[in-house]
Length: 354
Image (cartoon, rainbow, N blue to C red; front, side):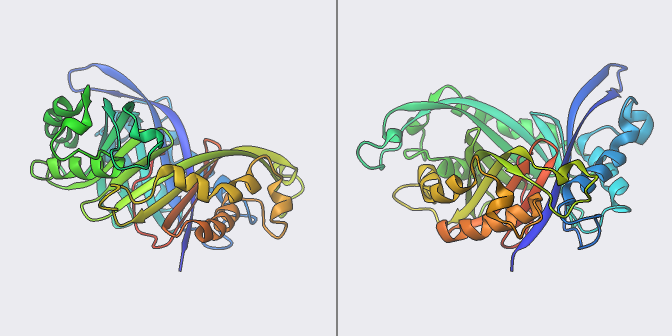
């Protein structure tokens, strides 16, 4: 059994006043992910638009106001709880609410009421993979601007970001501006190995550690939760679509298009020699035929029985991708910056890049 959720994202400019009287502003991104029942939205294919409208309405009281005066506490976890409460009366089956206060920090909440704070750290590192086949480009010494996102369970009355920074500081000194292969335990520094190495290094000092995510590039990376390794590969395609069951007065009933962002999430056992679950390059190769059928195509002609919305497309794409990628666990499809849809095998909560 698989699970499909609609996903809406909004942006806003929120301001707050610090205790010392200093004003600060945030370019905030906020997201909600929900398992919407049939009929909640006005027409098939309109799920993302309807969810986005509810999200915009929920956060509207914060626009042009000091958040202190609206909710009191202005920390990301307090803001997340407030947004969830605003949405809860209007949106059924909320699975996830997320707030990104800046590219460096934010918070995630799940359907069980658990909240996780996260912080993003950046590293400039060189590495090579010693066990790849002869001629593989990653066998040569090269480098990345790695990004590491560390999630930890938020606790009431505790500054989660100070805890994250204190735990990360010695690792930053050890990893930044280094050749990773020279560090003990990182002789084969794939993204999967790096994520689990960082987990082990943080676990003793960071109570509530939940996930470590390593961005090798902007379009691929690895995630580790202390048990399971996951990777993702992101692709973009430019295609036409049409919401064939929308009212004729709705603009989306006409042929239009999107630059879609497609994220393929895979999990599996770590290959003890190669140090990865699957090579990022192999993900792209194995999905190449399906990708070619989507890119620069009229989706409403490919899947004429569909409704043209992201919830329909993510289901169809996942069905076809599963045949090509045996380790596939999740598919996220964004139709532009305001939202999309998410498919998963288990429905379990996992923080995703907004």
